[in-house]
Length: 194
Image 1 (spheres, rainbow, N blue to C red):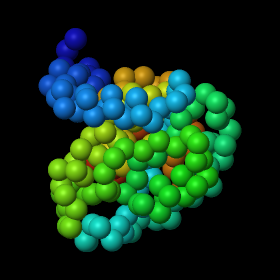
Image 2: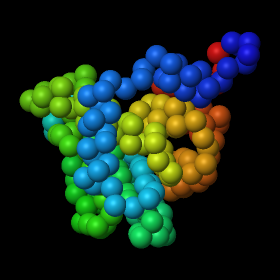
Image 3: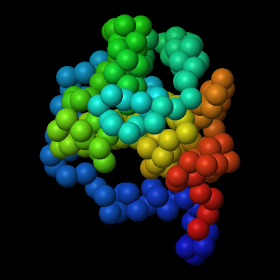
Image 4: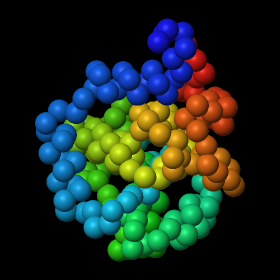
C-alpha cells in the first residue's frame, strides 16, 4: 500500500502494533486486573476528562461533562453481560460510577496522575495506571470517546469501528475512526490523512 493512502487510524494502529508491543510486566499487570476484576464477558468503556484536578497543578478546567448521557447509555446495557470501565482524570467521576454501578464497575490500580505533571504522586504508578487504562479501552467491545487525544488514540489502535461512540456535548452517537477528525476537529491527533 502506498504510504499516501494511509489514514491516521491505519497508520497509528500499524505503528502501535509493530513498534509498541507491551512489555511482559505490563502483560502481567493486565492479566492480573482481568483475573481479579472481570466477571462478565464484555466491557463497555468511556473516558471522562474534566480537568482542574487538584493533583495536577495548572490543569485547566474543561467545559462541564453531561454525565447523565453516559449513565443513560450504561443503564441501557445488560448488566449480566457487561463490566463497565471509566478512565478519568477525576476521582469524583470514578466515585460516582462506583456508587451507581457497584457490581459492574472495574478500575485500574493506582492514583490518577497526569504523566507530565506528577506533582505529589508517584509518576511510575501514574504512568502504569494510564497504560492500563489505555489497554483496557483498546481491547473491549464498546468505547465512548470525547475530545481527547488519549481516547482518540485508543479508538485508532483498537482497529474496529464496531461499538465506537463519539460523545460530544449532549450527543453520544455511533462513529468511525475515520471521521473522528471531523467530530473533534481541534483535538491533537485529529488529523486526516498524511
